[in-house]
Length: 198
Image (cartoon, rainbow, N blue to C red; front, side):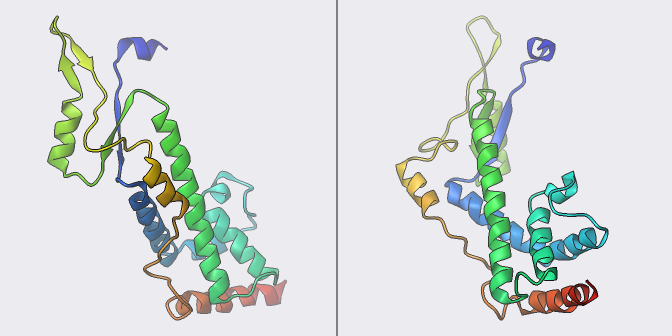
């Protein structure tokens, strides 16, 4: 509370408009994480004896889903095929989007944050942020919430809500059995060894 009295802290939330653009970026980032070794790292955690959800590292979004997926393959509950791989990827993407939604809700409920469209250029973002403070009649700096463009970025309109409800991920790296064949091959080669040893 002391900090609140001494400082006038304000923050800005960068979020693309519409929210579906954020979800597309999240989905693409999840694909890159998988491509860049998420499953290998999850396998190493399992090899060290860690179980999904038993530590902060194994509860992290992405790692938990990857560890659960590989553990189910190791137990023989799930086939190491393209369908199960794509379902695993979809689970990671959905969990990440849900987390982003919770973050946006948290920011939206605090008046110290103003929302800016992340599609704007750096100069325009800085200009909008610095315009957030204005001098009042007595020459004191006063804060006002930055608003620009149509609607409110923080709260989707009726059309935006409908688009979010109908949202379906459109992968760019892993779209079919052929595009995920190298990942599936790695899973079969490395996780079948673990199954045979069990």
